[in-house]
Image 1 (cartoon, rainbow, N blue to C red):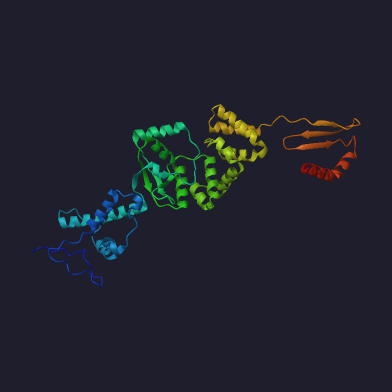
Image 2 (image 1 turned 180 degrees about the vertical axis):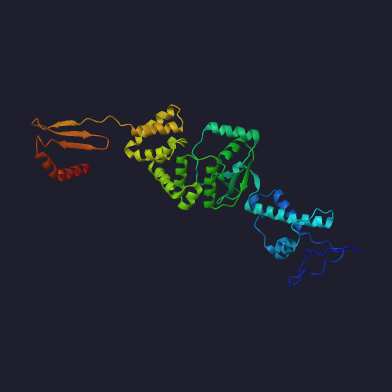
Amino acid sequence: MARKNLISFGNNDADGSPSENLGTAGAPAPNPVGELQAEAAAAITSDRPLADRPLAPRPLADRPLASNVASERIAMLPTQLPSLKTSPLRAMKEAVDSVGRVEELEEQLRAGHTIVDLDPSEIDASFVPDRMAYSDEAHKELVAAIKSEGQQVPILVRPHPELSGRYQVAYGHRRLRAIKELGIKIRAVVRELTDEQLVVAQGQENNARTNLSFIEKARFASRLEERGFRREVIMQALCVDKSMLSKMLSVANAVPGHIIDAIGPAPKIGRRKWEDLSGLIKPRTIDNVRSAIERAEKAGRDSDAIFEAAYRALITREPGSKPEAWNAPDGLRLAKILVTEDRFSLVIDRKVSPEFGDFLKSRLEDLYNEFQGAKQD
């Protein structure tokens, strides 16, 4: 007598119990596993751009194997089937395993974990730069490595929020530049990211792979704050606490941007020296700092040496000016005048004329008004 298989993947009756109708004789049995496998394979091999593929999860009603009843039936199967030669049991186990693989694949597709090849010309930089200019030597080394061994690590991009058909980098700017030069496709993971998710991914990946210098982190934090990002998001992106973030922002705001750009990333210069420089630099010292930076650049110094040159220009005192004596018309040496870059000092010798200082003080308002009137004329 033929043996009947009592486990059914067919329809249920209205009360939820398995239907006894096992199908019309001769009609093909439904194969939802095969349909899911075919659909997932089509999604991978499709020529359509990843952003155009329907990756959103479908309602459970459209996925028979993900329905509650089907899940309950699958749960009824033994968790570890013996290695039997009985083909129906083996086929049934493979069917259950296939469901898990298909669901995993669908989840990866929805999450954007699939690596795709993109045209580098369709990819734009992040809206908030983090790195400062890196050396041509490092760029050439990266180009040579990718040319020799291929791109080992994909970049992360998102569909451009404003330009249809384009993408925006979360991280991988150096790889993108190198691959553009090589003229080949770039391997990328495409994910839907909010602005906050993008900057967090951008900052954390750079911290994990190639650490940004202190001033690069400080500059990145300052730019994020200028764009209105919450400090909690900035701390998460840079993996720093509240105190360190405050110090970074203090330095980035105290040192003029054009000075930071001129110095460069200075990878060996830590927080303390940048804090010292930010405390020393003043509007009146900017010209001296710029001159020191230009001399270091002409001498071919690297970024760290350029910082040191700027720092020395701030801590090296200029020869002090000597006070100039002022003699009254009657020949008395009545005062000394000292003029510096930011001060004008007039010192009255009270031993020579005790009353002149008080007289001068009483006339200061009149003298100032006379001065202002002369300026307006």
